[in-house]
Image (cartoon, rainbow, N blue to C red; front, side, top):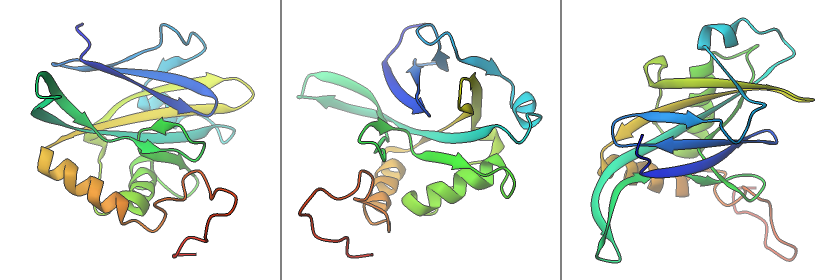
Amino acid sequence: MHVDWACVSWAGSRMLIWAVGLERIKMSTATVPELKQISREEAMRLGPGWSHSCHAMLYAANPGQLFGRIPMRFSVLMQMRFDGLLGFPGGFVDRRFWSLEDGLNRVLGLGLGGLRLTEADYLSSHLTEGPQRVVAHLYARQLTLEQLHAVEISAVHSRDHGLEVGPLPGDRPHPHS
């Protein structure tokens, strides 16, 4: 597969490398042997000792050029995580109260407004059986460039925007606090 771009995301302390080609989306675990791909159905049968992390890759075809000469092909929405790293929007879902999609949409609603993903947007699940038993679920939806821009704007106006990594010493309190 020709890779147009690759992205690194994290599930707990595990690194996931998502690679995107023109025709399909695929997750590469070649550098992360402790991850195991499982089906959505297998993930749903896991017991209560497992945490479920759901993340969404929102992307749009982009006909623009970087620096006026390098074709961009796609724009992808990523956010600053709580630990200062970049990742796809999403987070942990408490399976006692939420389905995967309801939990993901709840988390996305806090930061991205009215966008709602469904089971049709589901791509893959991977688990790790280290000290933290985490199942990472990836969803993806292609939007228009205008829709992606609107999601970006709504993220900037969300209640929690700017609190991803906490205040720096001497910073003023967040106006929504």
